[in-house]
Length: 170
Image (cartoon, rainbow, N blue to C red; front, side, top):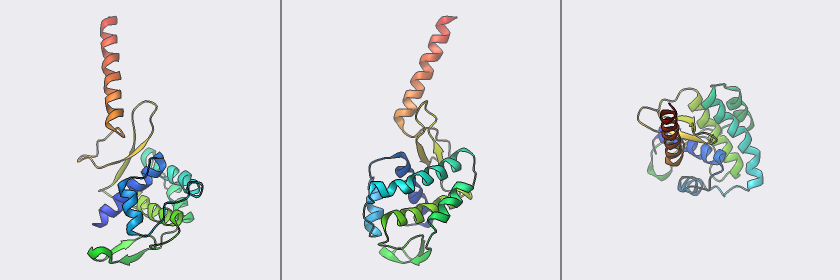
């Protein structure tokens, strides 16, 4: 796994948790590779709020305080790993660690990279009315505006109907 992919995938994990999505294949694979059990939902709630605040800060205004708070609560345990024949690369938490601590450490370090301007990873908030979900923008020119095709389509149809209605009202 390339280091940039590691940061991007941890950012995707953070977004998945904040959005309240069901566990993805990425999440299951991360937990399998790093010997992490699926966290207890009540224990995970302790992490989700500061994680949401950090992601919101990154997407909305770039304030660093929420990311620093996340780093204080879940300080990374950076070390070099060589698992799976991938060569030497950094990890932000120890394999087999308690799930919430592992997620917190790993995601806090990845989000610190993102807020510092990692050019390969950017996070956005869905522009569809009444959505507000977050997403990792991996489009070529970082121009993504919606969390899903459903939100993009719904917005396009609503805009089209509004233009038609305005045109017939003239």
